[in-house]
Amino acid sequence: FFDFDWKKEVWNLIFLLGAILGGFLAHTYLSDGTAVALSPATVNDLAALGFGEPSTSASGVQPDELFSWEQALTLKGFLILAVAGFLVGFGTRYAGGCTSGHAISGLSDLQLPSLIAVIGFFTGGLLMTHLLYPLIF
Image (cartoon, rainbow, N blue to C red; front, side):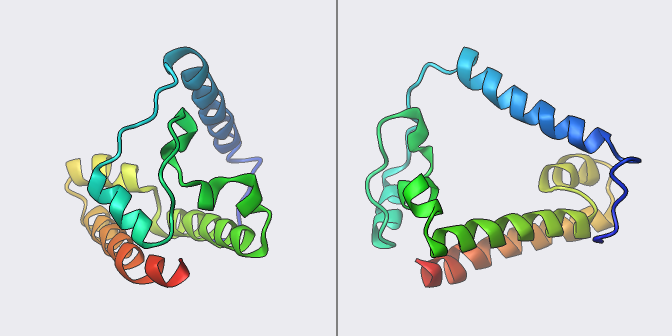
């Protein structure tokens, strides 16, 4: 899974650049700057884990305790982001696709490997949310 020929798969880099450019264009031209409304239950659950009130800006979607530069430049913050990024990349490569690809395309094609992958994604998400997340924070 670590043997990857980038010259043969250059479309991956173009896709990455397109995702970055698309995000920039959407934020610049399609966003009105208002924050996403979070459920009060979500805010209470995050407060129980030590996260403060979400900010009122559009950047308030992510908790500042995780995604601010002050936290990212700490050892704990850096390790969380580095390990999470590695696990997402490795899991996508190991599963043969991303969550959206398996859940939308794979399940609509009635592919058994996609069903198994989606069950694994949901199980992993539940384990992370209810077991690992409270331990980390």
